[in-house]
Amino acid sequence: RTTDMIPNFTIIPVGRSSFVNKDNPDPIDIELAQKGLRMAQEALREHKCDVLILDEINVAVEWNLISVEDQLELIRMKPPDVELIMTGRYARQEVIDAADLVTEMREIKHYYATKKLMARRGFEY
Image (tube, rainbow, N blue to C red; front, side, top):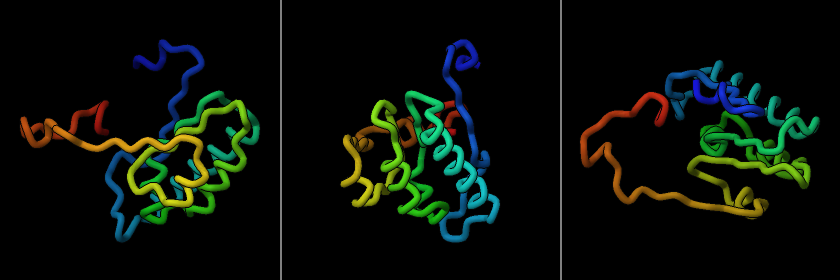
């Protein structure tokens, strides 16, 4: 893996590799999201990193895997010298209000439609 060659860079996946049923999440998906939340809290509390990326956390909140209050608490507990990056669609307004920087990406052109390509391992999943 490329990340093995980068010093001081760690990726810790906590979800399953399958899709989550947003209308009826499996209990294991909720459990894994809560585990990821606890790991993020610990990383911030114990200052284990300079940059913490919580990929798709906004989706986890939207799908009720974790609460928006837990997400806001992560923002509140962030040390001043740590960059906290939260990604995903569906960012709640209260999260946007609490954040220092908010960026929205939108699709203009995508190879899914133009070239009929499926999701690529290592990029979309």
